[in-house]
Length: 515
Image (cartoon, rainbow, N blue to C red; front, side, top):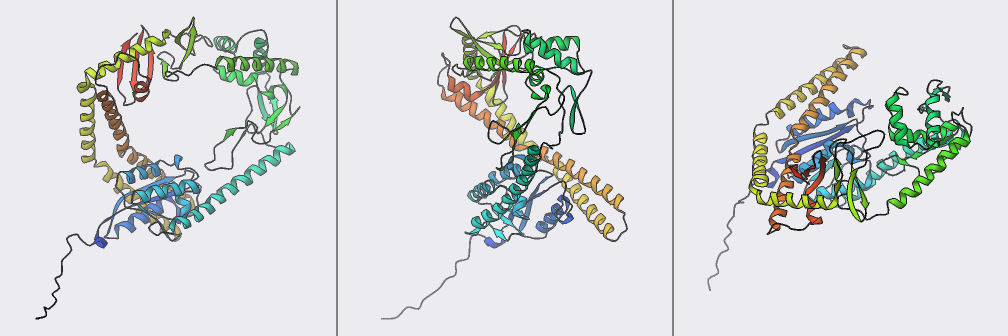
């Protein structure tokens, strides 16, 4: 038997070398406005990442996303960060470069959630200073530890400030920052203003005589009493403020030690400090106490009144005259909607009340009209928006001009720094020119974001497509009111004069209907 010789054939790859594929890279920068570290400055970071990415032939610069002067404790406050995530979802980015985790986020939970989301989108995040690459299996643990340290530092700083404020409150040495109407601050003490004191006293006496807050507001504005335009909420604030009797309640609001930091009304979560006779009062104590009893009675009655079934129209019906929300009333078993501001503080709206059944019938007619004219009202806008978006994308030459100016500003800033180090430029000139550069850069970034706001156009297109699906799901015209369909497509209803309504849909389409 003849032994056959082994033969090996080399099969050349049909797909290019993965290592040589172009990687679409973006960078994220964030600095505080009070940062004095030039190495961490916004301009320096922009210049660094621009040069770094362009110097690597395997990398293609997608964009540099930067939020300057904005807190890192919450993603919601960082517009460019959110834009970067949207671009990742759109498949525009493969890798994100960040200087450190503290620049990326100081909230452990949001940091991890964002990285997990980016992993599902096959987007890698590289934290340069921390030596973390999210491609590695154990990166998430390191990210959590690093971000937890950053979060702990932010919480510790907030706690130190809160403790200092609380200690001052306990000792009665807390510094007053603002004075209510009728008072001024002198030597950290509230002092009554003689010309405003009678106006405050009149509010209390009028209220005890039976006048409502709305009536008091109307009369004060008609007589132009005081040096301001009075509102119902402003007068109610005065009538319930203990400062007018000579006392002071401190820590009415507080900031929970949870990121992101959000100030909340203190409803018993933390200590409050009531200082009696802290300053000269404007109102007698018995008068003030009598007013508070009336407000307590009002609150009990309001809670009873609000024990109604919530309607699908709640917060969606608006007055076309004053802009306030319509509220639901009932008379002899019939529900109808009225402007909540009409008749308050002298306000007289030209719009009329409307029965709930009339709102339902008007929506039925609106829906059937959209279904009948679907091509004109839905299909045509979708085609126009898609075409417009494509045209804007093709003709978007402004972006390159803005990028060129940003690069020029970065070079100017580098030269300025060099001249400063050589003592060629004095401190005053340096600060002035540096400030001008940063202001111009901030303007360019805002303009760039506005131009790139394609996601908003895409959202409108998607709402139109959603409306189209809902219309097509209903095979026939509707004869009865459908709450689910209404809630899915209607943003608000504006009541006009002459018994007319404007239905504004979530896609932005506005249709007028009589009732």
